[in-house]
Image (cartoon, rainbow over all chains, first blue to last red; front, side, top):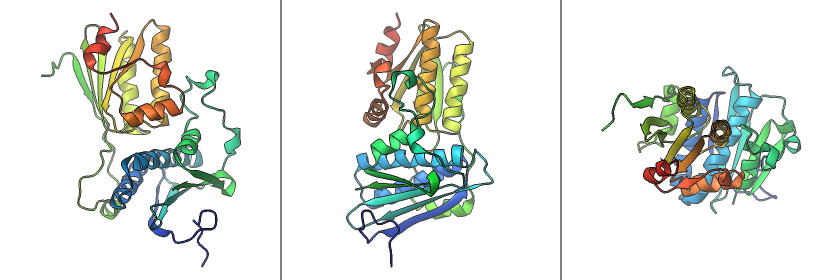
Length: 145
Length: 147
């Protein structure tokens, strides 16, 4: 059976979390707390947990704000899969039209440093080992090895 | 001891999720803090803001925004934020900090940070804004730096 979360063709990822929730900040807090709990039980090192936690926070925030336009009647979905080697893959999906990640300005350019938004995708790419956008940008998959 | 006349606490506690979801995620141990406690007090003409919890999108960032707007609206532009007990700062929290840093500097003031965690420093550095802020080890040093 094909493993949709296989990274580079690898398999053996077990589903650890699969939540669909209303698109609001309370859901983000709930999902990140659940993921944090799972990662602690997997004995993922703290630094790695913090990085994953923040990346997921950013992905969920984007899903709520941009994918769902803050409409709590819409649903965001988060899945967490992990393998025996401690590798994890997380996907976040929203019902929005998607976006072009390459069109996001570099937040580290001097003219953007004092901007109050635009850092989420950049942070995700820095914190996770591999990031893929699918379905036109309405789904993000993030791997941490 | 807090002086009620010069200290304010803002509530950022979000509404709890549905019980069924809570049961699914709460496994009997202490949960991560999802609430940001904000305490504001004045010391030597500097507004000292003590934060406790994650600074993330939602009630936490909204609460800090409200607190900052009130402080700045009262004409105070010298602000020190103690981050020693802030577990995480997401991009919304960073955006808020740099936005108010810019506005306070325009008024001749500043926002200085106290004891950010190692991970908070890493996050601020990753997005290139760490060097925009002065960082201090404790409240006394931060307050004194405004003199």
